[in-house]
Image (cartoon, rainbow, N blue to C red; front, side):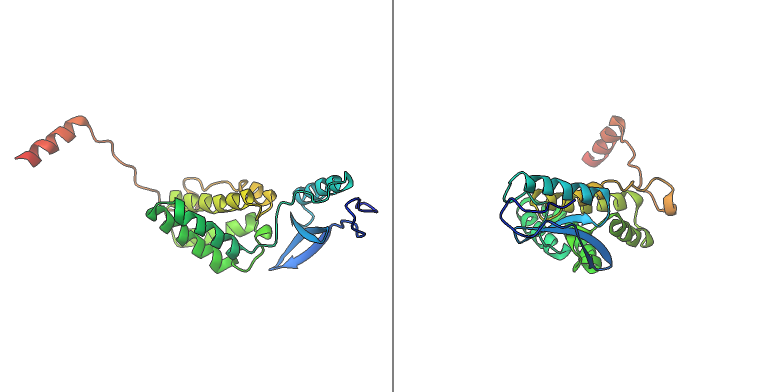
Amino acid sequence: MPPKKAKSGTKQPAIYRQKRRNGQDTAFTIIDGKRIHLGIFSTPDAETEYRRLVAEWNAGIVAPKANSVDCTVAELILRFLKERKEKASPIQLDKEQRICAVLVSLYGDADAAAFDINCLLTIRNVFTKKRYVRQKINERVRSIIFIFRWGVAYKLVPATVYHELMALIPLKKGEYELPESKERRTVSLDDVEKTLAELSQ
């Protein structure tokens, strides 16, 4: 139950609230005038986070540690790519920009705190319909999860979002009859020496 009186000085109790945004019900509370996202409404993770914040509030902590601030998926990606331009190689950055373009096209205006496993599945389905190689699809999904992990580290996304995305099971061989990456044949030392000999002639 929300506390009857705030020990941080605010008169309003930290109520467990619901907000409908982009077709999803998100949970949040307001403490000391700050809106704190909790995750998807009515989920165990969101309710656990709410109870943690209220416990800190009742303990007299003026500004409980919040998991998130208002941030859209597009804003999250802009900040992510800004840092990656300084750290990633040109090839890796190009791959990440392509993945981010898909994210923005589908969920750019959505609340990053509301991005859940169903959103991730939707994006993966886009890749499967394009008949991408299975291993590449799994790699792209891992890249998306990494973006939200980065967001958690910078307090832009609730940790509950990252934990839920991690629950998605990678595609297994044979699923959706997707093509497989070609196995690289191991080259023997004899083949290498033979090729070098031919090139030296």
